[in-house]
Image (cartoon, rainbow, N blue to C red; front, side):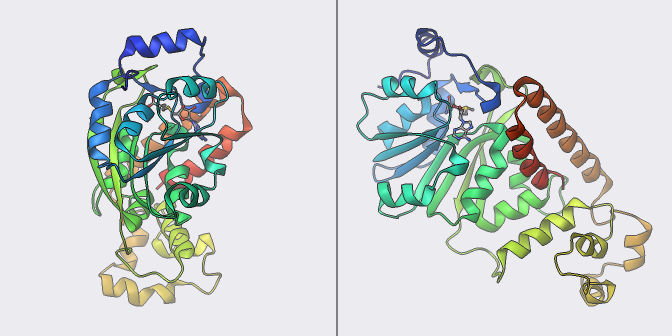
Length: 322
Ligand code: SAM
């Protein structure tokens, strides 16, 4: 019977093992049974499903998953959590614990081994510092998966779900919506975690499309183009894309003119009003998001002093600085 959602039981396990939270791994453990039950119901797990859980912590959500799915494979990076997981999950025969870094794990091989290559469901309370690399990594590698139900920073969930013309719409929204239908299914306050994070959280379900909404010949190039277009929002679209060098030097104003005219975009207006493709409000909001990321990165580096932290944030920033 799942028991760790009750704070007293989590504290007892942590004390028994003298566990110290590691900030560098984004450890905020769930201690709210309602939130755990909500994640399980919204992830629509059935007794036929094989679930991949990223970062099981002490196994709180894993217990719930194991009681609902056919099999659960969980990947945890922290050495200190492995003996704890072996104990808290010992009653469940349908759980496989893998000690490793999800960003270096061959998820396709896990899928072949534990689910005969059929689509997995991913469920996780993600470490916030690597949310974007994990999601984009799973999508871009085309691992068979039917849905990803994850707890993420509220602001990031909003950006994934936004539609064109809204202030949070950006490269991340476009990328996620190319692969999946996003739905925020719960907002979760800081007091549902131990320790409390200093940002709000949300659970978002990304239901993978069988076929992307648009047909694209070169996905890599499309994403490079999206990032270039959003990253340099103060430049005209022509200059932003030319600067990124995606199409070499031959892409100039002339290549864009017919497209711009068709879309009714006035070239002169673009030049006179830098960033006119994105309203001022969006620009300010994005600056704030990037500033938040930078603040979190600085804090993280100070606490952990690790080079890896800088690399992870570089990837995150690429998608957030739109
Ligand atoms: N699932 C647990 C819960 O909800 O209580 C813990 C969630 S905590 C936010 C994130 C977990 O991911 C931690 O256990 C952390 O050690 C683990 N983690 C962090 N980076 C990881 C990585 N690169 N690969 C696998 N696990 C990671």
